Image (tube, rainbow, N blue to C red; front, top):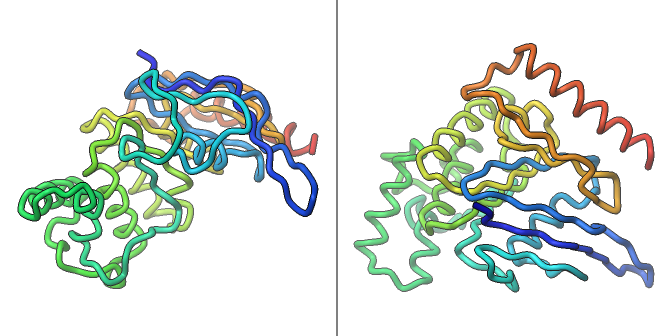
Length: 252
């Protein structure tokens, strides 16, 4: 069943009196519980498209709907996880996690209980009273994921959330994200520059063209999980995507 529909989306920006087209006629349907990765050359509009779905930007033309309802602004039903951890340094890990619930007016005891549940889910049980400066980068990103999940969104939007992590931590976080996704049954839209990451995570990979960003190809990944990062099937998909990306970079 379709959860998210992007129809005829264009996005133009104006800077120094000049018009720049970031997105051109983007059309995409995302199913409920689907894990979709976006990949493409730098500056192709991946993050812009994600921000439009989040309601942080409005399209110049076209429509974006979730459950058939137009997206006109931010909403807790679409949780955003950024590359930067965006945690409040003066709040404990638990207080950071339940910030959205606090804004909704949920009782302190109830939101504390729910926050602890999700911190346990992301492997941070026992860290509730720590502060962000006491955590590693990977742990901070776990808090950001818990903070998103605790609001029970329909879709989770992730903008290169593991880009700043070292390779070993990044691989661990990818596996943890899949575990959480399988438990929570959420729709995930995930922007990345890593072909390997996209193949490891996604049900489908959306390859975007060089600016202005268009959807060049959608590649379904039918491989069972957990996936071997070095299997013949993965290597074949990787080679195909890299070929597509090389042609787009060369065309700029």
